[in-house]
Length: 415
Image (cartoon, rainbow, N blue to C red):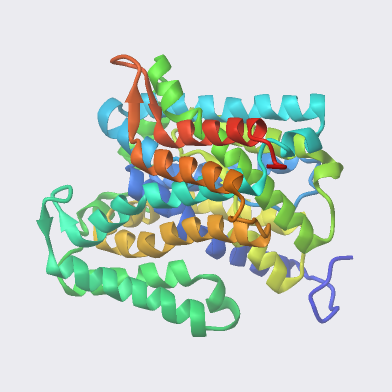
């Protein structure tokens, strides 16, 4: 029988409370992605909940994981949505999920250890750093400027500073439950500050229904994917990078729980769960899904590892997606609020890449390591996109990741 840390059996009320806590842990990051990209937050919550349930189905209900919106796709989705519309984004997200499914088949065929050899820390560390730093301009523009970065706003600076300071104070000095939700607390505090400075419009919230989807949400949900190869190549290569993130998250989750999920139920099953959840998100109009380390942190604190708790959290997320005013409130969030959150959040992504290399104790006196890391960092950050033709573009992130994988295999380790 599952128990709390003081060995008392879990009641239904305790399970519901623990599930709600997981919702709070994932909520800020999950709705931040649609807020930054222009996707619908209600659909993001719906896809997170349904995707988590689908993941648990694929993994035989053994892995206590919650799936939420992936940050790796933010820049590409925002650009694709603004230029081509939701139909193009749906095609790209479906393609990214399909890459995951293909990876699942590959892992099943060759074994997880051989696949791991293509993604050592010298490749994964710099690639994760690139993910964070490529997003830095988005954070700064939202935090300080209006009109797409054209006009500096002092009110924006004040709100962003309040958000950043709140996140620092909560993360460093808060305890218990509050320490698990610094993003949510910072967003609420920043929203109040923005409201006091006259930066909040309530029109969308007033027009939205209390229960059910808004007209915009329904339009996004019912729009069919529109296929072009350029839409596929805009998002699908990023799945290679998120594959690295997936391996790290499943490893960490298993370490917390005390089980090797690479063996049981198997890496191929966790990849299949992540991939099918992302394909479903693409069909519905949500962002690509990924395993959430925020919820693994909740597991570590509560020491309750029952996957049922995560499925309860998924049901809560689905219920929240049906509250129209919640989605409208997130949509009306002022830019500097999300910009302030993003400054730390995107920086943390880059810092995780540094931590990967530090934990691996990589020797940068070794020329091989310097060369691989340097090429990934410079090309990944320096190249926006390379246009092969008018409709076919490849991101610098995908190019850098591919070159890193090739160099790791080609350059000798003993020189």
